[in-house]
Image 1 (spheres, rainbow, N blue to C red):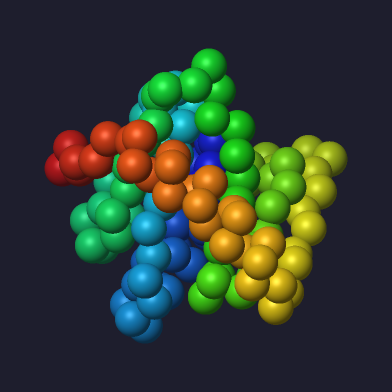
Image 2: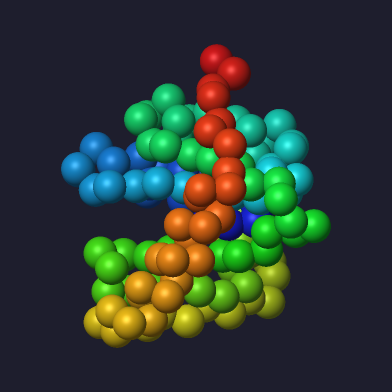
Length: 123
């Protein structure tokens, strides 16, 4: 779940995970991903068979969360962009093996997914 999504490194990692058989699904803020760079990244993951939805129901869907295997959560200020990785002051918290916390985040993620619209590749 993310706000801004342009990082080629993140896109590549998600596509590689999908190819390994990992269940990958993405929900992104609709307004934060209108740029050509964001849409190109979104097209790549969708063309790799990764379901992606955008959610425009909020002024800003500013969540940045990864949930792994219903046990691990990564959350923080880190957008999925090169600027976040190299220029910005960011924070990320990883909570390992706390399924109760992961379940809370998963319920939140599911509500954003359910309120989203499927993204269809433009190429």
